[in-house]
Length: 330
Image 1 (cartoon, rainbow, N blue to C red):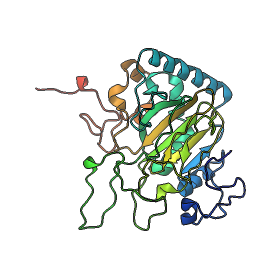
Image 2: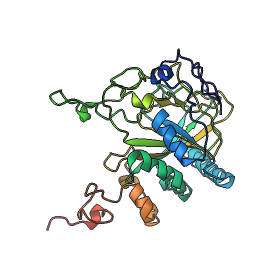
Image 3: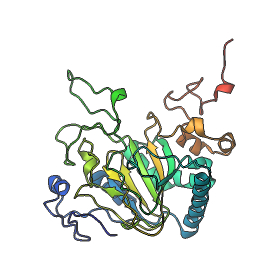
Image 4: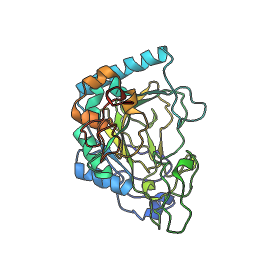
């Protein structure tokens, strides 16, 4: 794995340049940044320490090839039909990259990623045994794109307040509204992680094709980035069939694709069971797709009430019923 950026993180030795604010403030001299691994305990530890980990070789070559073909065909069809909707966090004016949403509707191949045991184990480690999908989408970066501004996936989480202090009203928060600061560990309480992003590498992730940029350790800062590039960013690389996984508080963004072809990434984005999903899974799931779902996939998509939340009529039912099956005016 190669790490890109002006910060002096050396491979293997773990040596860190003290001029790099994040590494210096975390006092992690001598600790190695995450390396691709198949060891689940190491993946969990890397998530806790650095805010991200690199899960190696989760999918075999045949499955990767099948997913790549299905995703490429779907993306081409959506672009031809003018269905390639932009994502709000993309760089301003970037009309090159493509997002393909609601992949659970677009091939059962994609269900295997959401249900993968390593993905579920890491989601359980960060979010708890009960969790669900916030999104299952693809992000395809093309040459001549723009770098996505650094951001977090949990910008909507209010900051903790002491009793008597004015609380932050969650409904008033806006993306890019702060609070801002440096990615140093907070000396006061911070919000826990409520989402976990599992980015599958459907093609190799390289610096040249815009691999995800991260700021190691920033998940413990309790503040948001301004969006500008930083000297302490790194760009972990990985091979197709692997994944980069990050805590929802992690500062990150996609890179610039200077290669000659697209980079295909696919996210199974997990959240706590009471968090509003990024995509409205229960409303958007196609009826013919729902009929073929097993119980695990239904629960991941939010069709199962959690302690009564998300129910339609019977709060103790295994799965919520659609409106056409519930009682109306009697």
